[in-house]
Amino acid sequence: MLDPAVVPLTALTPTARSLWILLLLSGISLSVLGFVPVLAAVSHARTVSLHATSTSAPPKRRVTAAVVIAQVASAVIVLACAATIVGTLQRLQSVDLGARHDRAVIAEFTLPAAAYGGSARHRLFFDRLRDELQANPGVSDVGLTNYLPGTDVVTPSIPLRLDGVVPAGDTINVLRLAASPGYFSALGIDIVAGRSILEADDGSSTPVVVVSTACVRAVGLSPETAIGRRINVGLDGTDWATIVGVVRDVRMRGPESETTAALYVPFGQISVGPTAFVVVQGTATRGMLVDEIRAAMSRLDRSLPIYNVREFGDIRAEYLATRRFVMTMVSIFGVIVFALACFGLNAIMAYMVRRRTREIGVRLAIGASPFVVRYTVLRAAAGYAASGIAVALIALPLVENALAATVPGIVPPGSVKVACIAAVVLMVGTFSAWLPATRAARIDPMVALRADM
Image 1: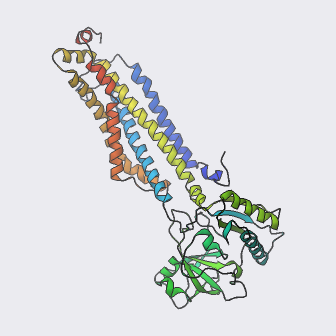
Image 2: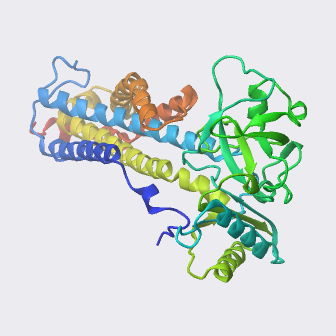
Image 3: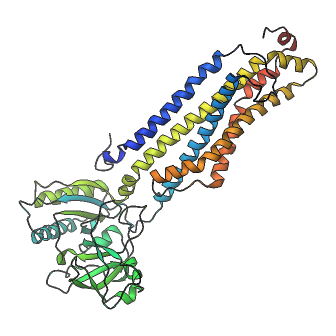
């Protein structure tokens, strides 16, 4: 059973669009399967030459050929889509979120307004929680923040205003976040220049702030030259603080987002809300760290629950859960469609051999070798497979555009992967007709000439 603390069940809930897509694909599958009995049932059509053109072919043969070509085209398209999603997931798995400690344990909690009304009482509880956790020998770093990196939550932003610097172009917005001492070291966000947030950065000290690299880069400064500058940290544009540190950029809205300029204001110098994330890093195991968080919360307030307990590395898995689900479904469907395409080719070749038993017998009787007969059947199968691949290559750009509109940040499979998929489909599809070709090559000419066609 899935643990909601690790993978929220809402992340695996299909959307209305995905349900419609699955319904459409199911309909296509049922339609394809419905033609299989037709191929087996039609057995008394009149004889047609192996080299007959499509204009002289019976209507039923053209219908079955169109079905097989559609099967092959669907197989190529679905397999290409599966390769697209797999490549996208691999890229997103390797994206650097800006924080190194994937094993850091994170828990979320909300202070009830009745017992903890006001920002001052919130800060007091946060400080006591940090003290409780830091007293444990298995904990090395503890930090708190009001917005966690890697999620898709909406964070507040303010216009970037640096004292004495006028940004070129349009106004640049920066995220305004709150962080406690130890937050950067607990999550593994490296300090590029200056220092981190300290215990002394409280309401009685000079207002300070730590900014991201993108923040100083936006105004054309280096991290070193930004130290000591004053920057606006208030929503109304009247609160200013001194930059004391510059940290690495963090992708606040997940691996598909761009890095956004951010300001980190100390908890002791900003009005903080009741909801916070506690980040714990240490030598203890995940289970021990979770137990220590629960024990510390229980000592402070037995009635206060914690939720969304997970490691920081799990956030990426949560974010990609829907895409991984889509990848799995598309891959399974691709294999099914590919198998149906091979079966369809096998069936139509068997049907063709059965209908042309007398013609094949005549060819063998006048000197045609079994190799030539086998080659003729396989060449016909390759023609069907190649026609399906050609249709797929024409339709694939349209499908990729639709997929890109549905799944942001999609990575096209590239011509090499598409060529490999087409080659595999052509090879396997062709040799799926090996059994009918072998059966045709073994026909006894005398028996075939006496056959009632």
